[in-house]
Image 1 (spheres, helix red, strand yellow):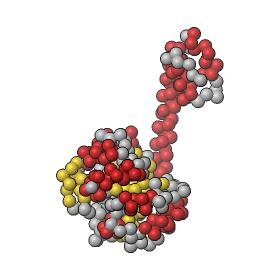
Image 2 (tube, one colour):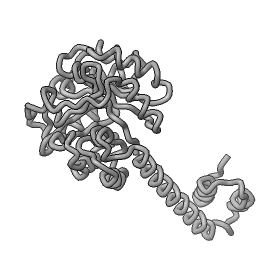
Image 3 (cartoon, helix red, strand yellow):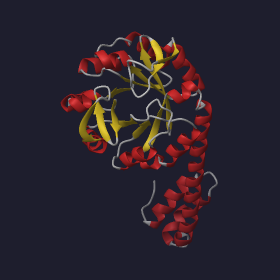
Image 4 (cartoon, helix red, strand yellow):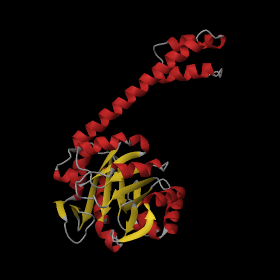
Length: 305
């Protein structure tokens, strides 16, 4: 699972909101977003999630210079995704030209699906759609309008357009540190073949553990915001937890491959077709994956080059 620190930018500062409220409940955590980005990268972040909150409200790239500075310093080291005010093809192209890997499109995707289709056609491989939902229904316009469409229906539609991932936020939990809505996020992911990024309410390591438990359902990334800034979640510990889980999964996969290899060897070892590769299979230089491929080929009587 990829853990992605969020840097929300307003008036040139790194801030956090509660439930997307741009008029109140705004907390400034760092007056220098570039320094904040550097902090997360130095701790091991592999991707950064940047949001131009002023652009989200006005449609104008107010904080483009800040985003440019972050890209200039870190684009070669980490992936960068940017959201906020992505309402025209020109704006999308301008941001991607900075070295950004992904643009995140929210309200415009829902209200102007033709625009999203054009973005996917022009910039396929670099498009994430953000779906903000309440009780499973997608909300737009600063989370004030119910579209009448379920997150699942729209996600399926946009998957057909060719978007690369869906960023799903339960707005009732965003910025509240009340825990991620893992069940709804996993349910959405189970209906799609593209990755789902979890967002909203993530508080501590318990939430990371719950998300790791549904990673195989397609919830492969998570946005981390207020929990990092208020210290309820230690980023290094979270990365360590993900790494430990990855090693555990890899170990289990290797054991299954070895077990399959051993079982298959009893079935094919004495067959005439097996003679040509006995020496290769018994070689200690072969990896478990290679041994399994050899045995699979022997079983199907398909020679390997």
